[in-house]
Length: 478
Image 1 (tube, rainbow, N blue to C red):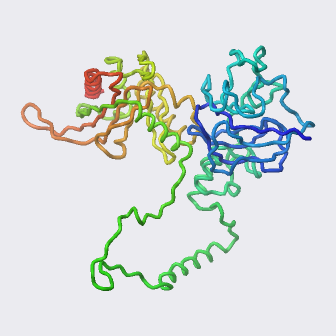
Image 2: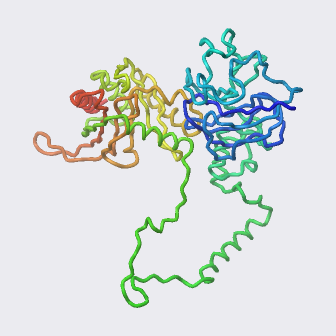
Image 3: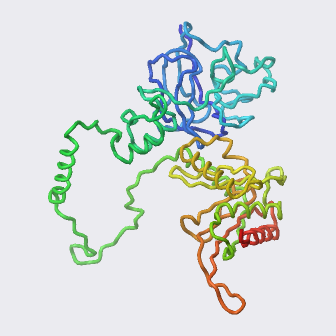
């Protein structure tokens, strides 16, 4: 009887409890070889490609694109083909077929979080090579070369995101995810990348032009104009095909009608949160449950600024100056152990708004960057967020946060602190206000600032002095 293998979704190196299926590279009945692309999965931080852990026939796939799969749940089942290359049993470190084991089970914390894709037969994070194997499990005395799905016979190389060819189309998993989101048939998009790879720009251009809409047949010459004309004719005839609806506040008997609240007649359909928004919901709920937030607000007078000042660069510099003056807010706090860690460096989490949800990448070593370095770093982070090429490690580890929501609208806010940080600065929309000066009044441009701090780790006096240092630095001409 042929040997069967149940492959469980591994922890994709991000410590998240689930991931969303973007696209299968195979279908039931296909034969797949060890290391070949199996499926693209979207987490809160990236779209990653999960390779096959075995060679053999695909018996079962766990879901359809868009389905959410929990870490450690069965992702696929295979009938192992002994005639094809397989992972040698001697190379395994205890991650055998079957349900996850408590010691190194599905969903366990990744000991070295990074952007790599790691996978075992049981799912869950892979043990560090230097750690002894749990009691009763083999593999504790050898180098850990069998815990990553890859070419085990030749190296310990870990598979990261790369362009794959599915259905004759070469594209990165993130590009395929974007095409699905924009309802673009990627098979009809002309790739302009190296070797014909379809890029983000290709998909966005096709979506804007409407030339490759998913589900629509490929247009033939001469049909586009005819369809357009017939569509206009149908649109013009539609109103005449049904009687116009008449609304009245009175019933047939002439009495006032009782109306229903909007919620009663709402027709929207519930939508399951996925990817970034799903993680955002968890993070915000966790922050609300743990942090004791208090917010201070004030206005930074920028009347003395010389022309050409970069607002974001000045905000970053002011935060660094305030962190030097009051280190208590450039810190991490562990509410379980009641410990505080003050940081000698300043890594600022820059809030970046996208259609998919909120990203907060880290601007590293902001305290040693000049204005040009800050602008270059912020532009790089935003570009990487937009094309989903940001390494997972760049979304963690910041020591304080900045939200420049004023670039859209709003004056003051109560921004949310994400543990273990203890403070976040938010800048509102700049405005002019009348300011008393010696001899009269002047119109000064001001930037509204909101400082939210965790009152478990900081005193009100520390927060006020931090805000004062922010205001003083922002008042300087340069």
